[in-house]
Length: 466
Image (tube, rainbow, N blue to C red; front, side):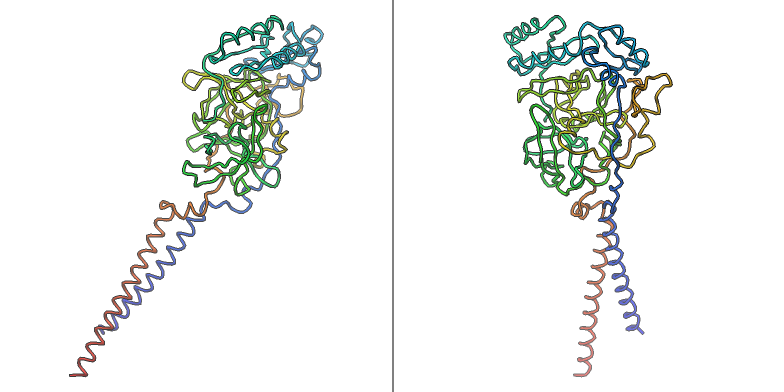
């Protein structure tokens, strides 16, 4: 009877150990596959909508640059159009917008900026057209010498009284050290927006972050490779494409990070409007907001001149370069550079997204249209001017806008690699513990059985030899 009980115990122990191995293996497999992107989960993409941020732009286009001098949003989010004569003003008012008669047309303002561009370049200077004051504002940071400032002032005086000179604090620099951090030997930048050419997916980020061939990682140990820069434009422009190492952006490609594990879902693209409230996200300072203060700005960085930028009073710091600028879920720009910081404030310039997409031949990655995709249009007040049938944010007061609909955000580049999951003790620890215990039980059972067999063998032969 004693031998029968031993055999039963051994069999039960072996069965339990085998069951433990099967259970532990299943748990490890489940943990390894838990964050795997389901087939087709990132597939439902649609063409990003093009959003009109200021309907006054349609009136400017209709009247022409000889009769207008820009457009902006007032404190209530309604468009104001600068015009040069009363007839044009009447046309603007009839369309439901506010008209402001000014002394200089857009043609004159553009002529002034062309003269400034043809003058010798002085690093640390910038200029932008201020639509609201009907002036071209020339700025110089603390690095510009007194002699260069004097020469620039003489050039401005020759143009006319509508060129205003300003000294600024700090330095105009690019913001190279998700909006998630991406790192290479060139430094640290922030991922901008995910884009695609229909075959491969890319990160749209700042051009000054690194030349073609730069390899980017998601960690400072260079183990989690994100991708490589395959197309760069800087200076003149400030954008580049980082092709994902896997070829695909993965799940959540339509979301930009804003911190604390949250992100904003991007639903379309648009051109920024002066007076518009905007949000910027970066890997150094997180989510910050402010207003668009100018368009078509030119900045003379130490590395070269970049034109056609969006000027804002949103702060930024080194490492925020390439991060996304957006409003109400609409992609507007990517962080280029500026002056100041997020303690004292400052000026930040952005590369317009629409121009970068057009020149690179890629489109924004967005998910299937959501219920709030057209929230800018649905929030329009009944009396707001609607020169365009496109969705518009014009009737949203700048102070009441939001970044967009928030959603949880995962790691850069979509799902975590299989290797990373298999080495994550938090994810597979319980399964490995069960497997380890089962193996110990099997080895112990085998050992005790062998010992019992040897003991029985000795007892038998001792008896027979007696």
